[in-house]
Image: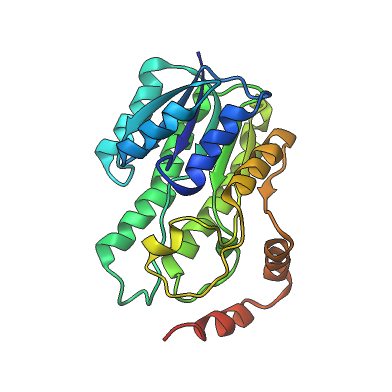
Length: 251
């Protein structure tokens, strides 16, 4: 049985990844496993799928129990895993020493631990031509005062995915890290951010490009000239310049 998995499939970019995978005739899937906390939105998404059967897996990936629900199912059913999209994640905006400690640790659990564990459980079920797409952010490339823990988790995802690509290449698995910029999703509502950033990036296009790049074996997927410029500047400018620039946004 050929399976694809998308985490964080109840909203935002995860929904678009699921739709794009289902619509892509070059990706042959029997089932698309949708993993997230909220069941009702995933049921609606599953009913939309046309080429593959949507399987709803309700799991809170910030918890041991939730991680077990998702990863143990792989071990039990042992499918041919053709695509794994580790998209689940959230952000918090504000001063590190003023934000809720437990919630920040949950962010690390979801953005880093869950992604790492599902990658580890998924790779043994992947073979030549399988795609592993991990969702990071351009913010993971630069110091970002006011987003310290979130930026750090995404920096981990970038380093982990690009390093892992060299290890799994021998199996013919292609690893890509998707680094979007601001998008029209629930992101800023969840982050409780007052940053006035123009959200002009279409998440459907971000997902489609990431899948295209993964199939082509491209390590990093970045959409848009502005985000590509930010990525380039992150390598050219002193890190202190970014610290100076982003701290000005803090109240």
